[in-house]
View (cartoon, rainbow over the protein chains, first blue to last red):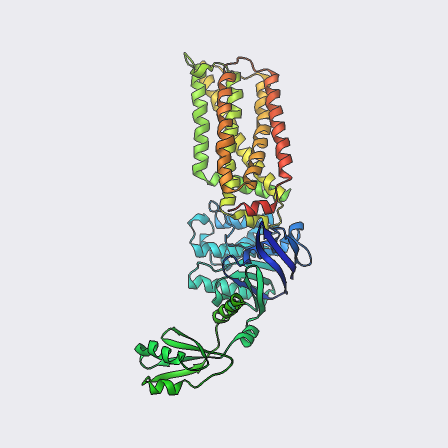
Amino acid sequence: MIEIKNLTKKFKSTLAVDDINLEVNEGEVFGCLGHNGAGKTTTMRLILGLLRPTSGTAYVWGQPLSQNPHLRRKVGVLLENDGLYENLSGEDNLDYYARLYDITDRQKRVSSLLEYTGLTARGKDKVGTYSRGMRRKLGLARSILHSPSVLLLDEPSAGLDPEVQKMVRDLILNLAREQKILIFLNSHDLDEVERICDRIAILQRGRIIACDSIKHLRSVSSEPAVEIALEEKEKLDNAAIIIKSIEHVAKTIISDGKIKVIFKSGKSPDLLPALVNAGIRVDEIKRTNRSLEDIYLEIIHREEKQ
Amino acid sequence: MATCLAIVRKEIKELIASRNTMFSSLGVALVFAVIYGMSLTGEGSIGGIISVDGTMFFLSIMLGVFMAYSLTGHVFYKEKTDRIIETLLSSPATLRQIWLGKVIAVSLVAYTLALTSVFVLLIITGVRNQEIILPGASVIFHIMVVVPIFIAAFVGLNGVAQLALGMKENRLLGFIIFVPLFAGLYGLGFSIGSVTTITWLYTGLVLAGALLLIAVAAFLIRFLSTERIVTSLG
């Protein structure tokens, strides 16, 4: 497991990580969210032992990785860079890391991972000729080559097309559910995080401003919301203005040809009369679950106001 | 040891796979061998180079250092610019194993290229003079023992510098230290090249220089840390 206590990292006058406390357990998929510069990558580097904490500790299985090369055999890493050599073939890249991790029966393991990621046919080609998606898949194969117990992923599906994104997501879920690997991932992709993470932490200016399961965050932070579809799409803007003037309405968002209405203070006023009086015909009105994006933005904005 | 060997193996494999680098390095080694070989056997001589001993003494170390410099950038600096070093430092390999593996690999390749150049020089002089002129004992010792030590020491020191310094500083280092070093070596080469007998004193001086470089590299590597490397990635 990963155990972080009072972790702080300062670079000269910049406080990159500010007194973080965190615990991630076996079999859990944990997501770290935050803007650029929020401290996600620094936190991951501190866990990996690539950086020394200014104060506090970041332990994996009770020990710092920096001082224990043997413990690093149990940890898989996929950073923003895939860690691959362009002048070597996919097969040679995996073979190299297999040697570093002292894997017995290297050839078999390399072949099975190439097959698992659908790269067998390109295994002998130089990585420099691979597409971004293929590199990412090979990078992921590299990170699980030694069957780690802990896997740290930095933006695992950034810049990938939807098909490869899904493949990466399924792979992560499979590793967590079937092999009980602890997965700690940094991501900007809220949709990805929502789909695969059990718990998340939201970082802002190096501090954790929220840390819980998505379900719990949704239940405690969400104001009620409804989604309205109109019969005449051209009246969306007009309808949004009318709704916004109704008491207890906090915000209206137009997206995908619908109006999303967020209420204040747990109230949910009746919107229909105002719309009908204005001659706007409503096709559908339903309660919605707020997305992780809504929750994330709400928490970030609330924190900024404070 | 297995980790170190894995790194050596991979670096050599990658260098060989980088055809442009290898072809240009081999090209330089051969061009120098041919130029000096022709000048040794011609009617006149280029820059007063007339001694086989002096030329071999100079060529082996000058080319070795030149190759080492060019290949070190490929092995150490490129891994930083590509940011692969972070993944490598997260593996079970320690920083010293990574450094040592790279030093051995670059030294082996650079030394092989320098030896190739010396061998070609011998062949050219042999063919043109219709007899193989073997260098003296001190030069053979210099080529077989001192040059590989000097190359390894140079790669070690250069490697530490490239790992520790940021991207801008690394580029500056090339101009501030290595350009004058090459110029110095080149100038020295012409003066040594004209010396007909290479005594053990010359060999001893170069060996002392190599040992000094090793001492400096060993001293500096104590200050090299994973954090220093990661924070200098830019």
